[in-house]
Image (cartoon, rainbow over all chains, first blue to last red; front, side, top):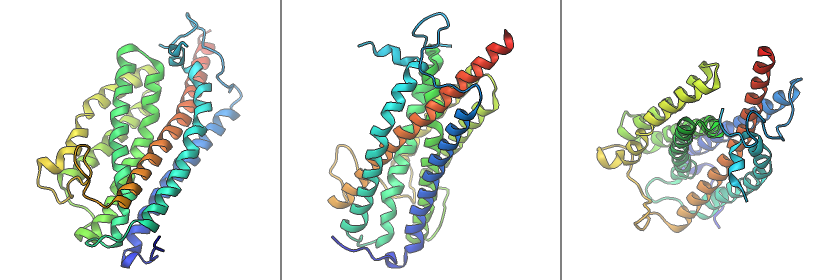
Length: 63
Length: 241
């Protein structure tokens, strides 16, 4: 095991910048999904989908 | 066991909820493992120094960007051809994650290009075709957002996704077909890889992590889309009644 040189051999900005940008985008995706789910659950008409949508057939798959 | 029942959004919704932790937790573990192998075990590259460590996020992100587009096109095509609502919803769900991975590959590619090539960007075939992939994702997302009727939005998106899928082999083979600044493939299915074992291990672990992460977030978004569309359908039904 080699302890990494944090300066990345003078490439720290590029290497850590890449991982920082990736982390920001991933965190943004996860947080925005949580907020979207939260907003959906707070709507008055919101209810968990747990039963089949009965519009003609029990196992309706098409619109 | 009748698996067809899970083609119904209402039946798939609880199943997706149960599946999410089985993908999210291994994804987090593999991300940590991949970073450890990539930074603590993989040695410094003789030519590129430590700058090469960007590949542990750049390459998996680029592969995921292409793979998710193909999956999106397949699901959109199935949704269009068979009028299968869940497939169209899955295509919509895949688009955002695919766009995010493509954005990561473009940004990290620029951050890799500057120290190794001396430039952030060149209009070579690999980078330009990847940028087009990003535009295709954005077009798909924008098109679906611009049309109120979900069924019409799904059909329009499917046309764009299926036409745009031709761009994926162009991205993959661009480094062979044209003389590009971007380096050629170092990992091929039928040939021995040209990189050290620990570097390859870090790359493959990060790829697995990205794949598991994608499944988890796509399932979470799919559940949101199911809820939104069912609520909208209820509202339309109430308004029409």
